[in-house]
Amino acid sequence: MDNQFRIFNPRMLILMGIMLVAALVVTFTASSCSSEIVEVPVDRIVETEVVKVVEKEVPVEVIKEVEVTVEVEKDPGELVLYSGRKESLVGAIVEQFEDATGIDVRVKYDKTFPIAAMILEEGNNSPADIFFAQDPGGLGFLSAAGRLDRLSTDITDPVADWAKPADQTWVGLSGRARTLVYSGSLSADELPASLEDLTDPKWKGKIGWAPTNSSFQTMITGMRIAWGEDKTKTWLQDMLANDPLVYPKNTPQVAAAASEEINIGLVNHYYLHRFVAEEGDTFNARNLYLSNGGPGSLVMVAGAGILNTAPNKENAEKFLKFMTSKVAQQYFTGQIYEYPVVDGVKTHKFLPTFAELNIPALSMEDLSDLEGTQEIFKELGMLD
Image 1 (spheres, helix red, strand yellow):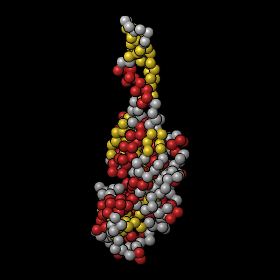
Image 2: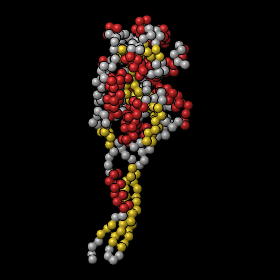
Image 3: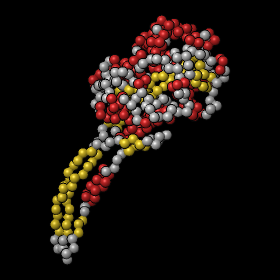
């Protein structure tokens, strides 16, 4: 008989399957509000495999060795992220970065300043690749210590000027406005027009604040630049005379305003919107955006930088590019009600536009001296 046929062994079939899978492009589509597709490059290496092919002829079987070249995906590696932002806020977008890239992200969560201090203590042995901070103060602290690398322009250029420092050692990822949260029972004519109004004795025992919160400390740091050291210290002393209730962070202040434990809390804007999203428009608190252009009208950024000792610098760069993509930016505004830092992303309907906010002319560098602010707080007995 003249018929010839080939029998492919199982290994050959597996290799053919690998070749098919390797031809696919890994894409990621945001699960929130955007239809944009982020294309994530997949590193590949070429390998040559020798397989055996059986050619069967009657009455003789002949076994030949054939070289087959296949592409296989390279191990994308890992990324170590030290985050001063809470997992409840950014955990989901970090997971989406993992899904899109295959990079194994290991995250250490804590407050911004303790994380920054930990990085300094770890020195050159720090495993951290990225420092993700709640505010500019922590990032400025590490930058001044020489621990953040200068970022490439393809990372920094897409980000708005107001959301990044001039030295390019870090980049803003989302914007957060300072605001006063107030009880729904207060009428419009009862509300303060400025931070100075809060020192009026009528607010005695009715105000909440969080001196250990880095966003509050950043606002006071900006106040020191805008008002000067003496006026800032006087304001803090007058506030202390009004017996403010001390809270560990922003969330309980919003809850306290809603329950009328306090009338006013000094917080970031987005905490209220999370409550309203969960409990509805009947939630008994609202935000007051001060329009006098003072430090109470500040818009800060949460941001990130790459450590100068980062073991996985290439993956760290991929992380920052992903976080400033429109997909991730849509997450920040659509899911946690923050301001985007790149053009072309629609701000959430809950938020006033920048045109409606009278933002003070303070740079990111102006907000970096958290240590100086903490020294004042310690002097006044506001910190242990």
